[in-house]
Length: 237
Image (tube, rainbow, N blue to C red; front, side):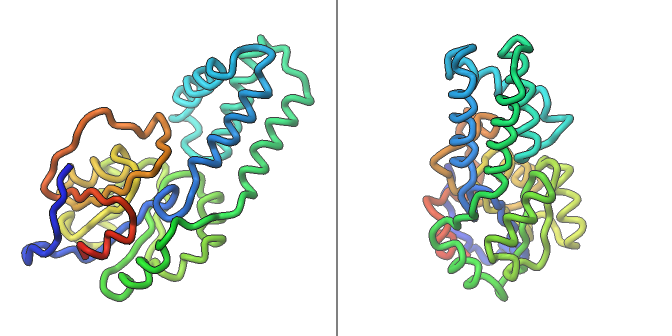
């Protein structure tokens, strides 16, 4: 992947947008733990790896209807369990699934190392915004728990992160696409749409990637910078 510096004087970034989950704080690992517990719960009906595949199929099927986030995840858990059990699931099992979801909603927010140092360094030099997707209430809860809200000029919780969604954000901010940079862990959601619009992107891989966010091709672009961690961002801005 490209690894260029923003020392180019022609670059005029004014606004930096940060993804939230797995960019500012840990998230995907919590979903994996919940999914493992769910698969164990249904092991009597189907091997755990098969339960996981069926769950992913139903999540994809429901995405347009439910969107993203924990509540959408729990609805897909319940639907998967009903199908996997051949509609023999008992009330106790449904209660267990609801418990998994409620516990997920109450997990502490654990920041990724160096995040607050980076935000405090960049604040005042650029307009910082949060641009994340997911359930509105849940993302607001996590942001409040994180203690990071004070660093952001604007909060954008999106139902999707595709080109039209970023176009709306850029238009709302009253800037040009080449004045906008996005920082995130997902090539699919944080990088490709922004590059396609003419913006800049910094990709910081997270050690776990949700299957839906994977991109199975190499991306080369002169406005993409690949980082190993968020602290490295300061070397380019």
